[in-house]
Image 1 (cartoon, one colour):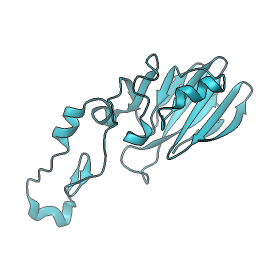
Image 2 (cartoon, one colour):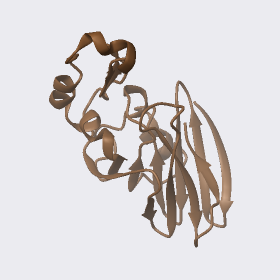
Image 3 (cartoon, helix red, strand yellow):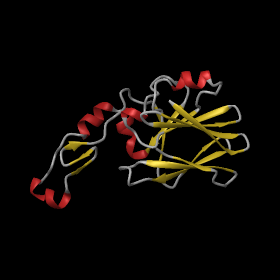
Length: 180
């Protein structure tokens, strides 16, 4: 895992961890907030580097390779996009919703078969290996507050449905960006 550190403001650092996917840990004072969790080894990485475990985990999107926190951070509040709660936390609901049911297959040329978790009968979105304990949601345009830091939720529609990034700021200003 490769790591980079970026100081956004006094006492506000972002540690970016890159492996098969990426995660970002924002450290402010003696607390931490994660954006995505791409490895089950993140808790050990934090401990090795003397960094706090996250109080808050924000997901840019929900998929198996970016939601690997499971019970590794039991005390953290986990937030996902409001349209991703079922995907993140309810595997039975996900499995019911990802079944292909077209009212009129003859309309496929016009509709292209859009489905909640796929397109034209192909599932393209998958839940995490273990359901997340989702504590709340966000949507594009909102600001998520943590300590005196604000995470502005920015849509990244080219990346997929309901995928987002975050602009990070303190005191009303924007200090940096977090996204996959």
